[in-house]
Image (cartoon, rainbow, N blue to C red; front, side):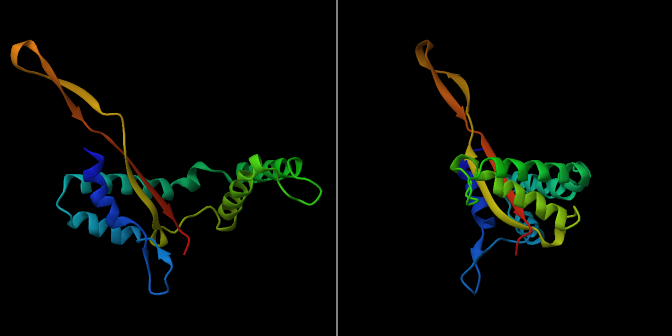
Length: 161
């Protein structure tokens, strides 16, 4: 399915401004209701991707053991110390370590469980993939290309308020 057709549906799931002027993502339950009401094939594909993202969020606790996460946190703290100067400022190419550390610590703080009723869609995007090329025979032994366009669907869920 072409990215143009998919984007029409993903735009309806994007975060919108609330009354306070802050961007707020749509709740997953509301997004599922919206997608089930849209009579398009692209909505079914996006709904499948949303359900996959939801199930991945539910089962993240089963994949990560608390001891392993604590080891990763200790390792990241050491790496941050090694790559920072006397003032505690981290070198530019190692700044991503802080965000990794924050995610892992947040995981440990909430007990390794995600409340699926509070999950919101942080980002939804449909980007073009490599199209499939098919040939159609034409007059006098010629041919023309038929492009079967493909799409990558990415949905990011977050439990941030």
